Length: 337
Length: 207
Ligand SMILES: Cc1cc2nc3c(=O)[nH]c(=O)nc-3n(C[C@H](O)[C@H](O)[C@H](O)COP(=O)(O)OP(=O)(O)OC[C@H]3O[C@@H](n4cnc5c(N)ncnc54)[C@H](O)[C@@H]3O)c2cc1C
Ligand code: FES
Ligand code: FES
Image (cartoon, rainbow over all chains, first blue to last red; front, side, top):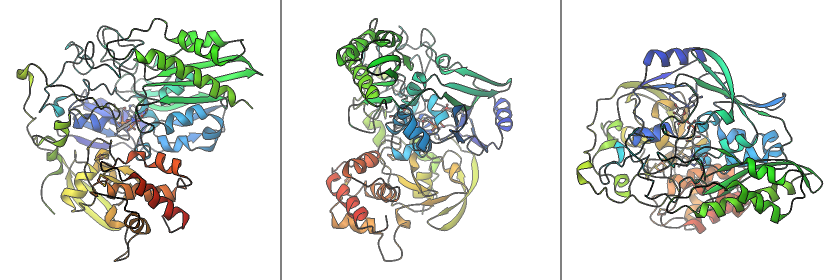
């Protein structure tokens, strides 16, 4: 690990100023559960850390206004157990509670969560982990070096949104739930404040997989807002290799509005199977205006994977993913009052 | 207590982690095969001189203030500089829970907590649970229920277990198991661990 300077910023302006003064080797630090982990692996090699957690007011959780508003530094555990979220928006709460462990949720922030990096083991095979295996190529870690996952150990990799340069899965659960709920990300940077819909936040790998986010490095996430569309009939359904404390093999965030047994609208996003949090429009179209049955739900699940491109070891994700959507639709619909 | 620099422990030759592979995803049990081109193998990065910063915090009720390497983890600070070796290092990547401590009363993994971040805060380790010679009820319950074999994961298990009862999550076995899923036990002492927590919760021995 390189030597680092550590600064605690007291205000947004001070943080941005410290970042621009420090230059390319600076990183913002929130909980550190992604950044410090990757520093130990030699994947991230910053020289300057600007800790944001001392900035007052950046961890607020507001549920009384027109929208739900989560400060970027709010802890995953605190957002998940906020009563209005826990009871009113199961999809949001479950996506947080089914992520990581209680210890990590006491450290990790909902803003940092949006910027977590893939768990692809070739990506994580940085200089800090070389002694026995050597460094494998990875276009995301080292642009232009190649992708060892393509034709390699790709059981955990994406079947949707991959390119010839990268098939790494987007690992987060919370961003998938936010995608289904049409969240907005608020940013603050050298050029002032702006906000973008979460649908425009993530970049497909195409031939530049090292560029993952449509955010300037000097920009801070300040908050996440979620429109108060009906959220009670929703779920985050996550299937893992073990029952708890594991990343998704396939997951679905689903929120429905029903007229009796008929689906008025369904919002569906997928995790664990795609290179970015994946909105499954074809599945939504298939159930809209129809009577929901397990058969229709599975058909919708299958529609989401039309056009999927499996690798060597991950074709099972197409069937698993379709079934996860189907089950999630039935669970969400069951919760209508 | 040793004067070893906690920031230096990251690249000291072959570690458990390098033997295990890459510290890949929690669920990804696959280990990368050896790189066919042996030439590609790099030597561990040289130990670099760190930047020193001053931190002050309370550890088990005692104020401490010292200069540390800015890269140090709270885990290495506790073990290597302050001598609190009850807190264990398993994976060093947030995946096993052996290093669980309480920061301002909440469980965190100290391996992924930058020590600098703990400045001005209250740290409680396994050494801080007992009052004098009297064990904490959760420590007693772990003994009563044989909730350990080798004992390596136990300090972390107990720190999480105390929080499980405190936070009202010890209402049933499923809830206990879910809450405790961030603490892995290589020996598989899970049945005893769950029983110990149930016992403390049921007998409202203060968790
Ligand atoms: C063992 C383990 C298991 C995990 N399991 C899961 C899981 O099952 N599901 C899941 O979704 N996640 C999981 N995670 C990932 C975890 O949720 C993320 O690491 C965490 O949410 C990141 O938040 P942080 O505050 O710690 O971010 P940091 O590590 O501090 O930052 C992450 C990145 O975001 C940048 N950053 C942070 N905050 C801001 C901001 N406000 N503005 C601009 N940039 C910022 C940093 O510079 C850094 O690049 C797991 C992590 C570990 C270690
Ligand atoms: S040492 Fe394994 S979680 Fe910290
Ligand atoms: S008792 Fe040996 S690891 Fe848990």
